[in-house]
Image 1 (cartoon, rainbow, N blue to C red):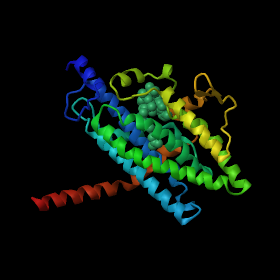
Image 2 (image 1 turned 90 degrees about the vertical axis):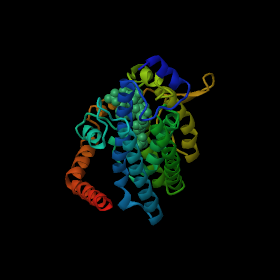
Image 3 (image 1 turned 180 degrees about the horizontal axis):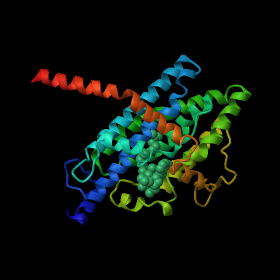
Length: 312
Ligand code: ACO
């Protein structure tokens, strides 16, 4: 494989497709990133599902149910995109990548290791977490691997609905009673810094960025996406009448960007090591689901086999 030609090919904005020849480290990078992205979608269902039975109205319950179901769909697209990369050198089937997550060998987004303590947190997740996810995923629509890039187009459309439903929940709370507005503020206080950490470590501490950018998987750096997210989100907080919990947040006229405080990187590192507030709970929930529900997979496989025999 001519590496130079491959790099030139992706730099000319061509898409790589599953059967194309590709460098091993490109394949490996994609399996790591896309499968971790899929795990994030699937684990990300848990904090929100926690509030389905307690949504304050039927309308809110229906929207939340639909949103959580969308996240399952995103996970499935992404596992399918990952599976297109399997070959003799690397396993990429869903069982293998999922087991890696259950065994703590593969990550999922740090944000889903925080608890959802109030209904306002469902608003904050939609507004901030899905908002940050969109910022990253719009960039990923332009990534060089065809199946991943195409999955991102549909996912981004759905995520923008999620972001709006979250913001609308907070708008209702902020226009409500004093206690409701306080609940919204408390939720922003809890989710602001964790949402900023979703973009990953600072660029100079990001070991995967260089190769990822060269292969046109990542199109923008962690820090530049984080900055853009802050720049668009501050005015949304102001519109709600909420205060962003960062005393160093200040518009910088010269840079035409907000300056902001240092992120709590120690907390981020602890979460990555499995020591966040909900890491153990999330993994245990997923392990339990796998133990108790494996019969569903077995039944579906048996049914598919039976149908195939009938066709023959
Ligand atoms: N949570 C957990 N792990 C993270 C996070 C995070 N927020 N940010 C970075 N990491 C991990 C990386 O996965 C990497 O570990 P690994 O090598 O074991 O995989 C390590 O920290 C170093 O980070 P980077 O070198 O910056 O890693 P990378 O270039 O992969 O960039 C990023 C990280 C931006 C998250 C990238 O992988 C990406 O864009 N992923 C796809 C999008 C995604 O997964 N979004 C999750 C939320 S989507 C949702 O809302 C459901």
